[in-house]
Amino acid sequence: MKTRRIFIKNTLASVAAMSVAGKGFPGILLPKAKEKLGVALVGLGYYSTDLLAPALQLTSHCYLAGIITGTPEKASRWQKQYNIPEKNIYDYNSFGEIANNPDIDVIYIVLPPSMHAEYVIKAANMGKHVWCEKPMAVTTDECKSMINACKKNKVKLSIGYRMHHEPNTQRIIQFRQDKKYGDISKVTVAAGYFETRTTHWKQIKKMGGGSMYDMGVYPLNAARYVTGEEPVAVTAQEIITRPQIYTEVDEGMKFKLEFASGAVANCETSFAKNVNTLNVTCTKGWYKLEPFSAYSGVSGTTSDGLELNATIPNEQAKQMDDDAIAIKQNKPVLAPGEEGLKDIKVVQAVYRSVKEKGRVMI
Image 1 (tube, rainbow, N blue to C red):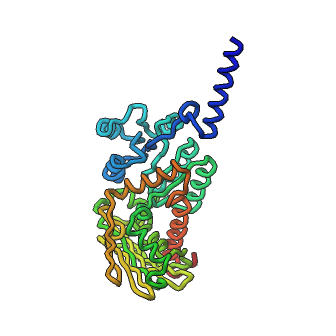
Image 2 (image 1 turned 180 degrees about the horizontal axis):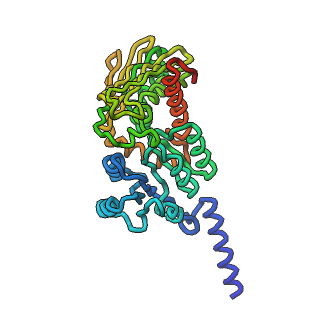
Image 3 (image 1 turned 90 degrees about the horizontal axis):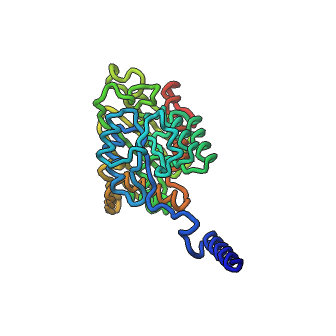
């Protein structure tokens, strides 16, 4: 019996050593890595309902595991539609209980901007990875607190910039890096749509409303990823065509960004018209994407006749799969919190320019 006990003890010790070293018996003592990460959506408005939830039916590395909503009717409808277990359905009072739910690996914040910081920090403190829709937050201080919370808890924070994951966008970024068309001299970029809603949070200042926060980060972010530079100065003009609706926030914004290289970006955003164009003028040619940020896809051309028409099945699915892979492989995400912080720094400068009626340094 003594010999048998010694044999068993030695055998288990060997298995443990091999498992720790990754040399054998990987499933005996170490938990098997998840093939798909469970994602919980916080806030079930249009973007979650019409875009993210359907996209999560197409993803290979993550899936819709849970929801957080303050509307019982939505909870019931989503549970039936997506076969979500009762234990993975939360409201805002029970949000903290997600910490004890191993089904949920990632919490995706899809709330008005004024609520982003609060819920990103809560999610990070529960030890969950966090995806946060753009704009990242309302102020740079909020952005920094979100980044710090995620770093402290050793979880990844990714901001929902779809275009960083889009192949045509990645190609024009490569144009800049290899200087295929020379140095960039001017960028002209605009993103907007006609907003028919009149009492939405996008018209409420304290909730982070305004075209600059919502659509404005598209041309702003594009100007930054196209040039590869951070703007040093901005001159902005607020545009309001429906003052009876836009009493607190901007309906539209035009802003000119200046870069240290001498390049300039003329940007526009609007809730009053449909526009979606990106034009880049260089010393040896030009290239453009039109549309450059549409949900339905991106396409464009170049001065030497190249067609920029790569397609992907679903932009949101690509974004979420890329971020899930980064988590699984413990690699950097394409659009971390620092990327969102840089945009909000410029957004605040845009509003300073409007207030001061002139050019401001960033």
